[in-house]
Amino acid sequence: MPDGAVLRVVPLAPDVTELAFALGGGDLVAAVPAAADHPPEVKRLPRFRQEDVEAILSLHPDLVLATTAGSNARVIERLRELGTRVFTTDVTSFDRLAQACRLVGRAIGRPEEGVRLADDVEARCTLVRTRAATLPRRTALYVVWWDPLIVGSPGTFHHDLLKRAALDNLAPAGAGRYPRVDPELLLDPRLDVVVAPDEKDLRDGFARIVRSPAGERLASGAVQVLWLPADQASRPGPRLPEALEALVAARVAYEKPGSGVRGPGSPPDRIMTTPQPQGRPQ
Amino acid sequence: MRRAADVVLIAVLLAAAAAALLAGGPALSAREALAALAGNGSPEARTIVLGLRLPRLALGLEVGAALALAGAALQALLSNPLADPFLLGISGGGAAAATAAFAALPASALGLVPATAMAGSALATGLVWWMARGPLGPSSTRMILAGVAVNAAASAVILTILSLAPSPRLPGALAVTMGSLASASAPAVAWLTPYVLIPAFVLLLHGRDLGLLATGEESAAGLGVEVATVRRRVFLAAAALCGGAVAFAGVIGFVGLVVPHLCRMVWGHATRRLLPRTMVAGAALMVLGDLVARRALAPVELPVGVVTAVLGVPFFVALLRRSP
Image 1 (cartoon, rainbow over the protein chains, first blue to last red):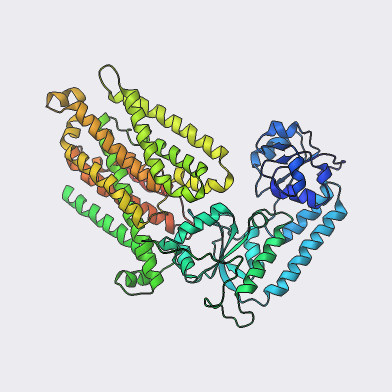
Image 2 (cartoon, rainbow over the protein chains, first blue to last red; image 1 turned 120 degrees about the horizontal axis):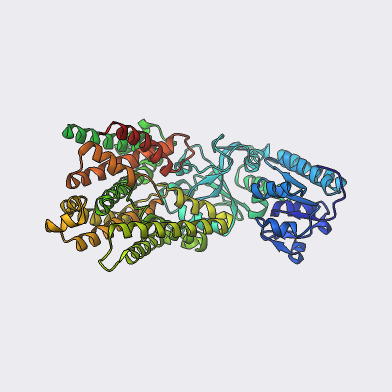
């Protein structure tokens, strides 16, 4: 990345938009992608479609912030070919998130804020590790879509999210970051926990899957379902630690710490556990 | 020779079905699956075998038989070896409608996707029929050209939707375009059954007429075939078969095109004899393809349409090279 004062920043995805603001660079952001909705200040900024190279260039950015999680690779390549500076984050873990905070902080001329935000991410992860150490290890899946069943595999920040909450990911490695997997996996007796972002489409998909044979263990409570705040859990940005904290809090509330025994008979967490289906299919 | 081929075909189908039940997924060993089939085993094992694998097997049999039979009938009807539900835009119409439904319907209404796909296939069928009508009625050439046009329009619709759909909806929409039996369920099998059985009955009933039509419309008419009636019935029956398959399994290519050719190479060109064997061969290829799709990188699932193509093409090429 060549040196040079950054006056106008254009983020290409919601997570890097949030990162720019969290680093105190909100005043540098010239426009935001259509899907960006946080922090509230973005509402008064112009919007663009992230595939629209012309719209992006017309904003005269000194720096474009992109992400492997949600930016179009061809757009990034085209922008670079046309001489635009593009910084791409690749947040595949909480360590990489901390690193992204430092690097983006430096790139937009906010190095101290970058270090401070990275330290904050690491401190929160350390705190969570202490809490998670009391939890028995369980086997889990991170579901991003129910039908077809699509899960986060090793090499994704969702895998790291599970790992740091004392959950072993049942998803296979080596088949891409978010592979489509066999729905029988939901009936695997090793599966204890399913984690999913709490958004309407996923809730509706869940309501359908628990009425099907594949969702039998979900419906019976043999598999615990933990719903995480959707934006925090789906965007590898500065609010990702909130998803981790929510996950560990939900696990602590559900488990009996220290006993090593999870009781399906123990009271479910009221906020984020499996909604009980209203009846079995005919 | 043909009797031996019949025995081999039935054996392959039974072996594929048994493998799908016993080794169809990652969650159970074959021994556990066998115990579940015998009425023993854990409740989870019974759910997996009877609640997931059995409907998936049944759906695979229905979809494979439907696509292959539709392809064989269309190839005979239009006297064109390239005719299949894809070329005629029937699959494309269903896929475009299903993709649109995935992108636009509220998540609570996604259960309507199969009905939407069927409506799309019916619309595409109607369009092809309407476009193919000339002063002397629809001709084979006009039908194929109309099908190509409808197919191109459907592809454009699908690509537009995929490029505009909100990203959380893309997995479902893409699954339609790539084909999958993963959503199989007992109700889906029950819904699809009349869409397979009734058109299949109609096509088998017209087996002789189709055989005569394959030699040319004029000669068929000279031999007493009511060409216009047969054409209408066969086309609608093939469209219903294909629409049903797309509705519950998405777009699965190659089966409708290649299986009839494979069967012709083994059993000859007599359409009446060919059609039932095409159904069995299509069902076997689909079940085998789905088995490979699930087991090759288990628990990751490959698109079953890719697998049926990979399984079918080398066999097809080998037979093509050997045929006179």
